[in-house]
Image (cartoon, rainbow, N blue to C red; front, side):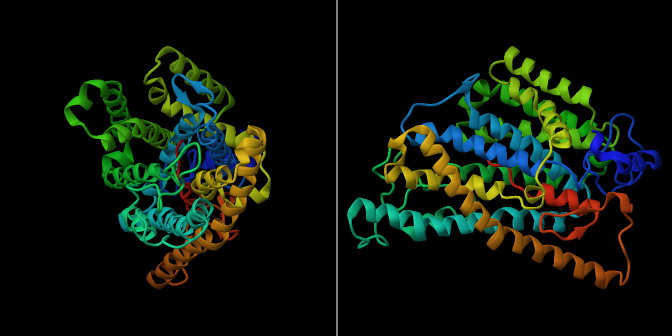
Length: 422
């Protein structure tokens, strides 16, 4: 991880409080191996945007009526993108929990995921669904009263758990009918993972030792591996989906717990990628879950060596790209763009989605994040006037809103990008 340069070496030599992959602001010993992830100079946002684009690509086949697209071990590429999302999220969110009290942690989690989610629901009933209804019926008469009514769509989905996907019987004249957003369902399970880390992250043993999270990860993998045995007894779809995604999240949490000793290095980075491939090849049904820590470490290492444009480093549009891709693709399919060929459909979908993602970032996500940070800064100022955070200058970072912040805030910025799914 050569780009961390002298700054990471300084932290390493002095055993700085920010030592570790993510630079969490807590007392830590010096690294025994590798280097810290430079919080100012990495490609985490670009990797997440790439994963979101992979989800769009995978969904394109279903939404265009062109089959199921490429699969690896029975999972489409969007599903594997989800594995990466949840693994990174587990690493970053666990770091956020370790550096914040419970209340502050929950405020940040809700502020990052929920306002943009609500905005997406509102845009769906105000823009996408009316266009679909008008296209299907030639009029908007009856739009607000036809089941599922627009207001019912919003209120039934208000608490992240998606219960309704259509609005006023739209979209109907598309290959994949009855769903305006088949991606939002994953946010419910991501937030459940947030709550799990909120609970266990307050235990002193979890903060001191990686063993509890390692044991929790192993238990989650064993649970998923034996899901065919437990599911007939439980008959709970929510449980099965959480069981599928939780190992990826906890795998990232394990990497965070180990980061006080193990940093990033090219040998372990390449090894983790090879190890992931071996696990998936050797264990067809739950090899991905088993490889979750390797997936997290591999993506973190790639983010440390892959160059990223500054514009992407400071503006994280991956969440908006993820939540708006499906409705944009459905709208384009409604108007027949998918009939012009998959390449045209995918590129047009990506371009339209990027516009909406930027709007979501500029109008919703970034303002909310700034407001939360101002609230915290004001509270700290009142509690300790004139006191500055004890963070080495070498580890200062610029957060996603372009403002200067300490290393803990820099990691928190990265943590505040929701995972998404396929």
